[in-house]
Image (cartoon, rainbow, N blue to C red):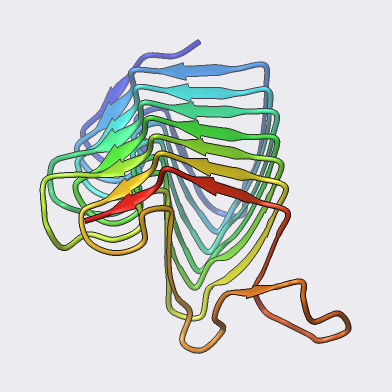
Length: 212
């Protein structure tokens, strides 16, 4: 159970130099930073989290709860709730990931917000796998030009999405649930068995999402 404020990157943890961190049965509540990663900042490192909650964390810049660069994170049975980056119109209300790999299983994102792109998750050159997760009421706010109410992906990102729900997420411009521009990877379904597709969406529910 943590509450902390940092004047640079990572409200609680600044992880670097090929470190490996494991979190279990943990709570990160009301942490903040004036830069990147309200709770966790990581570069060139690995994070494994199970049954961990990130709630009400905030960053002035990218990643309300977590900022990751050239890193790998695996999260299971966890919750991101009411995190935000709401000062400088940067991206990723809960998580921002750059040139990284992120795997999410049975991990939910509720009521996260950003004044930039990606109410819950934003990434560039991100390899993102999501299974059995719920994205509820995540939002981009305060502008008419921000995309991806729940997820915003750019620059050769890859997405594999299965057995998940996107309910009542909202973007002020495009992609109420997901905005994806992967430089040609595209979004595809499992209607083409045997074809090597970079991005797959299967057995998912989308309801009540809104793009203005």
